[in-house]
Length: 401
Image (cartoon, rainbow, N blue to C red; front, side, top):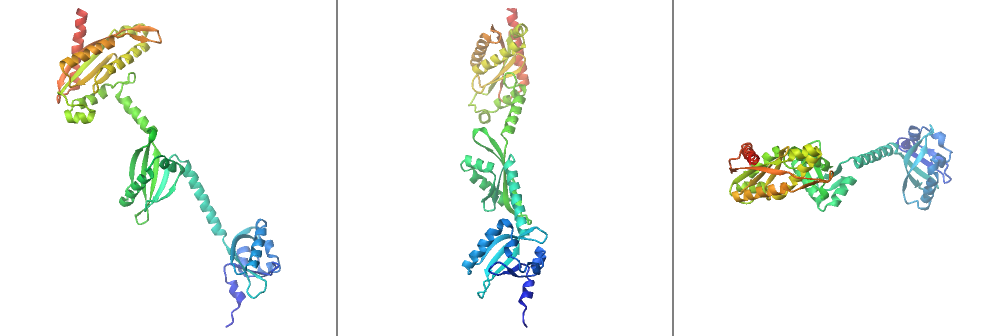
């Protein structure tokens, strides 16, 4: 059976073109109608290069010329060819010299317009993803199962570049996630007091295996600072910065712990198991407030708070209960030591206080009442009541003298 070569070529999905050496088209298969809308007879006799997009025409001519010089080399390149409707379709063109020394060229044109558009969409998608990831506040990275970093944003790269060994540690955490299949969250402190929260999230295949690990690092420095401010505000007097009554209870419980436990909580040394409370009430404070105003009174309270902090021993606690009332808690003191501390408090509080805004110098005094308890018997409210009663007795005795 004799095979009709042209009928066979008409079955091909690609456009096949045969051109003379002067670029005149002498044959086109039927695929040209399906893809470009031209009938073969519309193109036979026309110059092949006139169908090439004007911007690519010169390059196409040069490539065909190169084919003439090296006929044994098969050359491929992309070219846009005119459709009957006036548009252009992108092809991958394979050019070859026809066998037999005819001087003709054989061109095979494969429609790649859909593939090209898909690549453009993928590129646009990649660019959009890159723009998105580079502008989110988090640093993003992606490890494969082997621990290789496949993707990272600029902020991620900056983090790992700033701290030696960080990338290796994060790769190790990613390996843990691959092994367990479970998400891991860690907090990490950077230099300069910065904190980041790092999440290692498994990416799973349809069968549930972990294929990749997404690393999301979020700067939580501001949040931590805010939380610390809230903790400080909840447990401290806003004017003097001293512990308030609530915080005093927490510190007293630590001070009352047995020796080893207390040393772990407060770093204290071995002691004799005695906890003392000194209740301090300022003498003459109301007169300062009434004469110079509350701003002056606040300045006096701040100065007294600093002085009390300067005279107590390391590990002792000074707190403000409110108004002009302060409390000092001391652990492991003898009667002589407690008397010495009380005397230092009385002397330092009585020193003149200069008010620069008023250019005035004022004085206040301190009445102290002291009570003690043994380790393991702490009832702070009862201890403070006893010290308060003792302070009141001291104050009344001064008035009667």
